[in-house]
Length: 214
Image 1: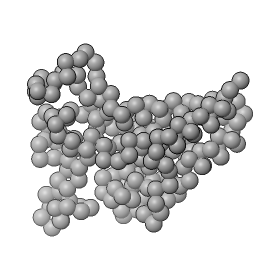
Image 2: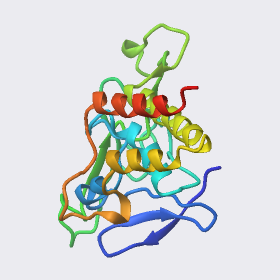
Image 3: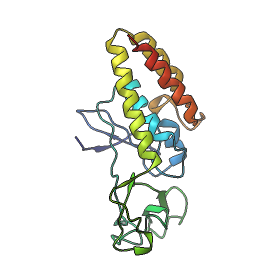
Image 4: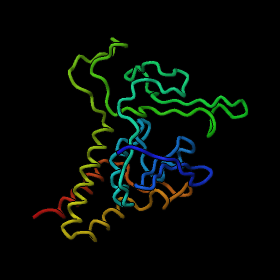
């Protein structure tokens, strides 16, 4: 299920929310604040971040985690290269918005916004528009972010299984350890509280797997 509506939480942060599920997505505005609340999918941030969001989903009992696109190989219509084909191997900026209001600064919260790798979790095997980038293979090329998103989804299922086996208290304690403060629990006055290191998330996975051993 994909769908969302905008809810203005405050003047600096927009979240995605709908009445039949609870899903959050930071706006591009004030992204430093947003990154304290949840993990971002862009290339510019720790590659472990897509792994984190499934844990956030469990902690706050969210029914849906929304990823807006995985193969957005055309420039978005809001940007200066509107709807042209992207050279996704040669140009990292995959989403761009430019505010043309002359009263706003070109950069800053009301100006230009961009995302490296935003909207792209898979890369094309063949590229008919940029032939020099053709990889000559017969399969989509998965990004590291996609692999970590998959790991997070797997962890969510392990967590669910452990809880269903009567280990709810241990599960909740481990999730709180991994994610001290996220979403509405934190703001720009706090540092990011979860680990940016894959080894730590491997350790959390091992602890969850220990709970489901028969």
